[in-house]
Length: 133
Image (tube, rainbow, N blue to C red; front, side):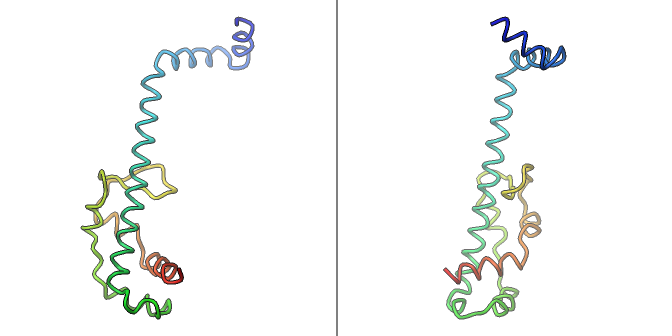
């Protein structure tokens, strides 16, 4: 065992050995913090997906009778007249955190945050994809 430890210490140096000893002494807290952060990111991304699904479903329900025959330009023209339930979407979140799937920094969810996240083009493209299926 001491030969392997000597080889590892030769690779990582004196500073690396101190860092490794510190990690082993505090590994429970370090791993706990990392798992907690991963859980927050998972919930924030799940909230993003839940809010997205809710907004698309509510918009689709409001314009669904005509949406099947509309083109992309007709959807974009009519989506401006739809009342989007931003507050109801905010209430769908499990905890008040929100993160896109490519983000590692969750933000507090608010109506302004949701409005800034979703553009009209996003809704148009998503509704068009729903229309194709």
